[in-house]
Image (tube, rainbow, N blue to C red; front, side):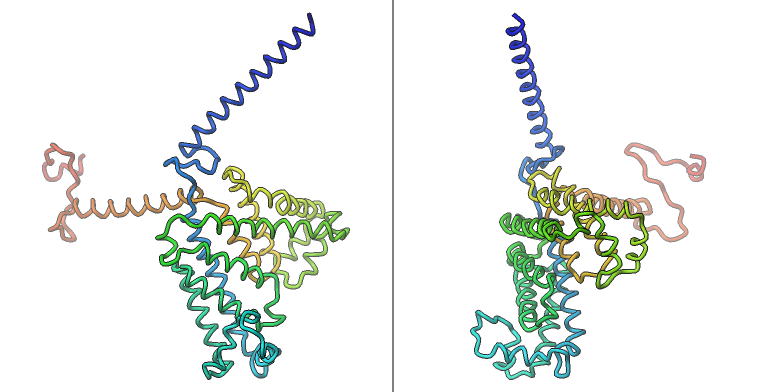
Length: 377
């Protein structure tokens, strides 16, 4: 009897749990259809999530990074690659003599075909890169513009030797190539719709790979300072280019520094997998966590535009629902200002002159008051 009673009670509990789960799922789906849920297709229109704003912001960010890279190259070219520089660029081209174009696709090699001085040609290419990247920053980052930026930076990287062999140079080329696939072909990003989901997910995977490898390599190095969470006690004092803030961070209590390392591991390893989750309720907080980590790294040390690239990639984790409140607020403010201007012109009338008494707007069917009654009213 007790056995049968327990069996019936357990079946009732299972049925009750299933009923609750079904009700929860139905509520979640309904809230998702009205834009209140955390699912990817949760839009007021009932359609899938859009990334028009995110794509436009991402391409502008990549354009800004290209602008920094080309400007830095242009300013330092003479000292690094000039005839009297550390690594004259002519020597790099001599090593590529006889190589097929597919093995060494650098636009710098065209100087001999065009009969242009090598160093003047390199400066011209750098100036062209600055112009194209500036176009991308201003919102004109179409596929041809992004392709031009990529081709120019690849050209400089191939002849740049050790000065352009840093990890951020390789990452810029990888992200820059995928940005071509994400950019619209013949329109401004802000005027185009429906970005390629394949390119979008490929760029997300780049961020996933970057974060996961950054975390795993710390553990697989078997370095005790990472395993004991004490790395910041050494890193902040010995990194190549610390910022002034790094000294103050180094004075924090060791427990605080250990907690910071633990947070880094959480963001870089489990947090990396969250960037691939298709639900915005998970992916948006993951993007914010990644962005905070990059800002903290930039505040404590100078690693070129490496962290800026990581920040740009986090933009694509956010769909337009994240930006729409900001955009709608701006649109509402602009509409209010236009309406106020129109009401002001109606209130003053077409014949109004400075010094004339203003006449308030009247509701339909309301008679104007006698002169001087406005002050009492």
